[in-house]
Amino acid sequence: MLDEPLLIRADGSPKIGTGHVMRCLALAQAWQAEGGEVYLIGEITGGLASRLKDEGIVVRALESPPGKKNDALETARKAQAVGAPWVVVDGYHFDGSYQRRLREEGVRVLLLDDYGHADHYDVDLVLNQNIDAEATLYNSRSENTELLLGPRYALLRKEFWPWREPRRTPQPEANRVLVTLGGADPDNCTEMVVRALGRLNREVLRCTVVIGGSNPNDSSIAAATERTDVSVDLRLDVSDMASLMAEHDVAVSAGGSTCWELAFMGIPNVIIALAKNQRGIAEGLEKSGTSVFLGSHKKVKREEIDEQVEGLIRNDERRLRMAREAQELVDGQGAERVLRKMRVDSGCARATSHAE
Image (cartoon, rainbow, N blue to C red):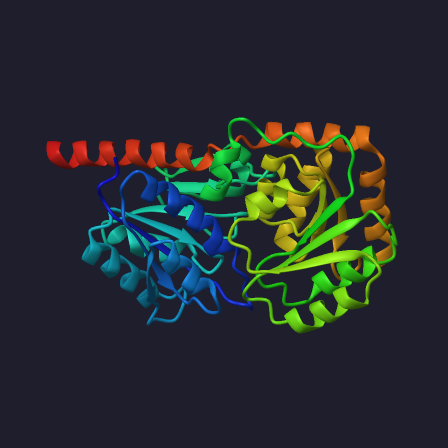
């Protein structure tokens, strides 16, 4: 059992999205399941704060400029105040100097990363759950910084845990399409996809479109769903994505953490990269034979979207093969693996401290 608190430092807003916070939520839920309390400090806007509070996480607003020296000091002081030996940090504005300041204050640090964004890594653990994660991304790191790399460490929220055993069985025929392009989607790619799927004009096709609570374009998306000839069920701020995913056969998604959830559920997806840092994930998944990558949202055309979705729906053999291979990538035990590593490192630290 984990009888010590955990502190998370992450931000979420319509501008930067909700992905950093939501994958931290998965780790928080695993920590809570073993008896530990969880605190989060950061700039949180929209409905995200309510979601976290509903999960039993204590949310505190950040008072310092994000990513700066005082941010690190404020975070460390908060960890010390609540008695948290570990701080989980997730965001691209946490560079090497930020990491070093945290550790100088005596806390252990787990950094979630995607593409080696920092100039130097000075933490206890770096977690990169992506398929394109390589140790060479972290050549500039402290001697005692350990790497946790690849989808075996993919963090899935507790709504996915019941699907670990038995695993979901994909249906032999397909007619259900899920559209999920992140919690914010500031460029409104969701509406573009809705319009694209409307071109299919299949009477038996069922589409579900999910938009997050931080999405500023809900009204225009709703209007687009009303104008399409395809049956569309619009869902806002879904709390149980696992059950919703289980009802679908293929998906259109961004190239973020949702890809690991879809892979776990055995749902082949057509990926549209909403940011540059999603390209490596999308290319890796396409190479593995589990997804189709269309490129950047700035260049993708509607006819490409409906063509690829139609192809997956019509070719059952290909779709089922992709589903099986996707489920082999992600087994749903990633958060537990990370916690075990944190527990071992904490034990070693305590033993060293006691010996001193």
